[in-house]
Image (tube, rainbow, N blue to C red; front, top):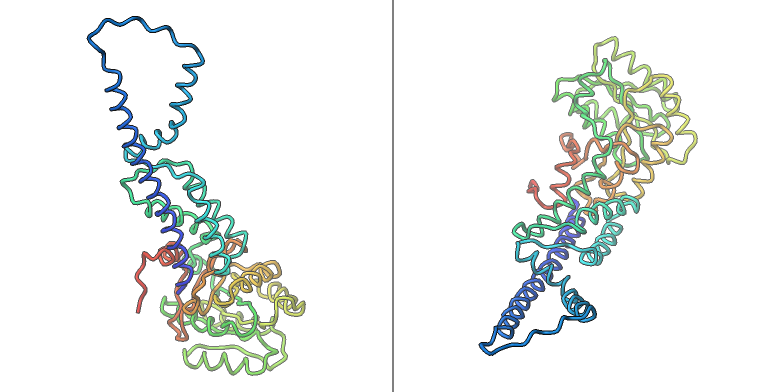
Length: 372
């Protein structure tokens, strides 16, 4: 998962490590050179046993020349002194080339441009101008900057999903939106299993009333999970279907209503009108956008437009296990201001995991062992 992006982040870390190692070698050489010059000057200025005449007072010009001479190698000598104290200064020119390479890598990985820019600014601010202890691995310093930057863009809007479910009045109503073919209905089935494992009952409602075969698809999931589902005839009113599911849940003490909706393109005014009507009729507690992680920037743009039309509360990214780039996972939260809630990681009902920004960052930085 996200292997390509992991490799590119690792490449950036190595590039900065190499640059700072070169600086350390230069500083070491400068220190040795400064020490040699000091010894030479000491030998040359040892007092002779003969009578000496007072030296004329030096002029301002000669003092200035001496100062300039000293300052000519002063910056380099200062770096040598820092190195001698076990410190190294990372300067802007040290990271500009690696940052440019990282920017290209992020864009190639389908990270949205504004998100990539915010990440780069954060990394630059963390690294440039700071004096680092060289006893700490430079790679660790860079990894800290990467970790902070990644967390800042993928932690937007995070909330405790399980706590919100636990504290909500029942039945809790969750509506799912997104385009056709991205795994909405399967994600609903997965969440039905997820809730069952946590002691909640659920009912599934097919608000996708215009797609041929939609009723059969959700029926198969409901039968496999031994879960109740509510559906009307094809062409019926989606809001009426979900309203009936809420009434059924209320009458039978069912905890959660999971409502599917038609998956037309986000540019369809009819779909957006349906979502608005569902909002008026049943007033859902949560609206979740579903798309494929492998869709990259297309998923990011769709999430943005669905959020503008239906005000989503969070996202589920399916096919995360097949996504080597990771651009959607990096970008969606930042662009919508709403969190990723779950990642779909396979076809089984248990192949869904709650999205954890900290774990995501560890995964991207290669600090988490992938499960077989």
